[in-house]
Image (tube, one colour):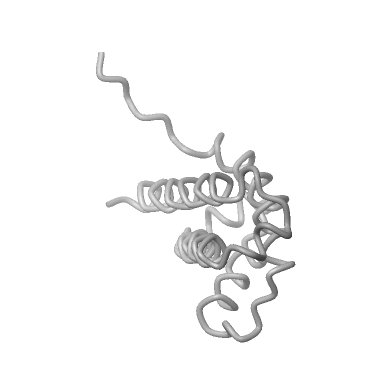
Length: 118
């Protein structure tokens, strides 16, 4: 797979996981989110996937698209994967309800369109 194809695949993974986060928190307020451990764990997992995929996007691509907060995305994944005792649900909620929707807007134009079946 060519580097640009790999980047496209990782961007797709990021977008799919980001959309999953939005679906998971849809219709919830912070209190309901805090009361639902399953949703917390699912959101954390999707955020972790976003960070892992971001980490694998080439540095060249990341440099060209510096408006995306790559370092913060990757750092959040690191906390979830390795410093799980430091997870702050308030921060995850902000990521899920503010930063992930912003990320979706940034990613959508970067995903190559698939050729139609026609």
